[in-house]
Amino acid sequence: MNIQGIHHTAVIVTDLERSKHFYGEVLGLKESGDRPAFDFPGVWYEAGEMQIHLIVHEPSRTLRGTNQIDTRDGHFALRVPDMADVIQKLDQHSIAYTNKPDSITGWHQVFVTDPDGNIIEFNALRQA
Image (cartoon, rainbow, N blue to C red; front, side, top):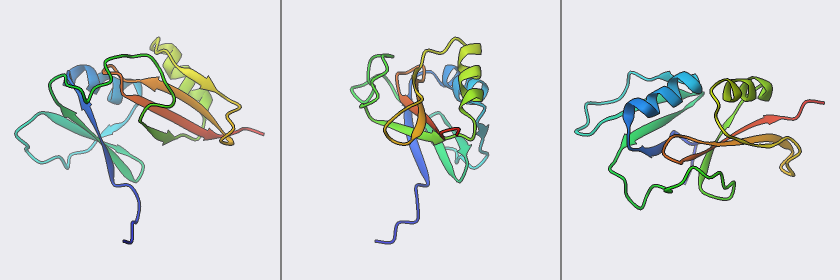
C-alpha cells in the first residue's frame, strides 16, 4: 500500500442543523460544495487538506451517548496555529473542554465534544 494521507473522517450526527452550527459557526469550518446528492442528509467541511463528513444517522451504538470528555476515546485531531484563539472561541460559546498545555506529546492539546458526543482534539505546537 502507498497511503498518501487521510482524505476525510466521517462523523455520525443526529441533528444536522445543530451540528452545522457547531462545525460551521463555532469551529469556523468552511462547507465544501462537493457533496453528492446522497439519499441521507449530511454536510462536508474542508479542514486543511482533508475533509470532515457529517452523516446523519439515527441514534445507535455508534454514538458515545455522553458529552463527557474522555481523551482516550476515539477522536480526530485538528492542528491549529494558535491555541489561544481556539480557547477564546470555545469560551465565547461556553463549550466545555479539557486543556492539556503540557501534554507529554510535545504539543498543546485541547479536547471537546460536538453536540453528539464525538470527541475532537485541537493541537498546536507549544509556544516557546
